[in-house]
Length: 135
Image (cartoon, rainbow, N blue to C red; front, side, top):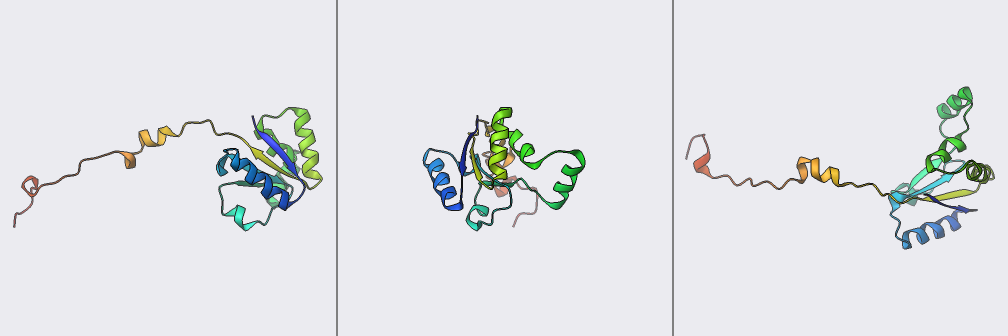
């Protein structure tokens, strides 16, 4: 389940992010949702997801054609009730910023188990085993 904190401005945003990190959340487990794109270079250089519900021009056009709003499309990713979605949707429309903290409970062991780069190989090679010319 996602923990969502509503903040009013960028200075409060940094306080909440630091608080979530002190609670043990990794940057990759945090997302910042706003109505428009946030121009915060230090967050762009981090693993925190920055999501603008306005999206790009093509996103807005496609949503207009299919009747979907950007806020709802983003909020449905977080397993919220309809009432929570409506409340947070209104927060976003009121130009507030949402900080979403969601624990990553998935196992990443499959990468280490199935990637040859992680295998320990003995690559000892002696000249006597070579089939090429000997000097």
